[in-house]
Length: 142
Image (cartoon, rainbow, N blue to C red):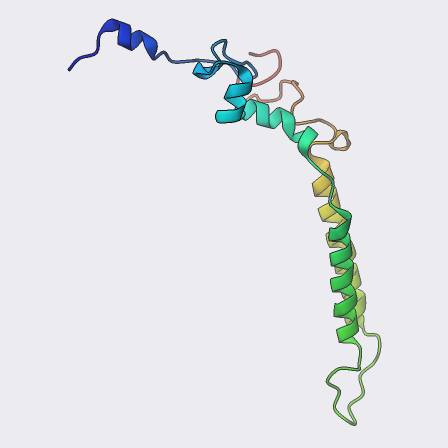
C-alpha cells in the first residue's frame, strides 16, 4: 500500500539550529509537555549544567577524613607487632602519604571547580566563537 501525499505531509522533518526551540514543540502540545515526555535537548542540558551543578557535600569530606584517620591509626605500631621487632611511630611513608593526599586533594578540588564556574575563566555556555573546527556552533559565526 502506498501512502497518499496528505499522510506524508503529517510527518515533517524538524530542522532546528543550536539554541532554538521548534515552533511545534516537536509535535507536543506545549513546551512543558515536551520537557515532561521527551526531556531536554542537548543545548538545553549544556546551558543548565552550571545551574544544577552542586558543590561536593560536606558528608563526603567527613568520609574521606574518617578513612584517613583509620588508615593512619592502622599504621601505628599497635597492630601486628612481633615481640622484639619495634617499629617507629613516624616514618617517611607518612610524609609521602601526606604529600600524596595534599596533591590529590588540590587536583580534584581544582578540576571540580574549573568548569561550570566563573573561576575557570569562561563558562561552557558562553557564546564566544572559539569552535573553529565546528562552524555554526557558537558566537557570531552561525
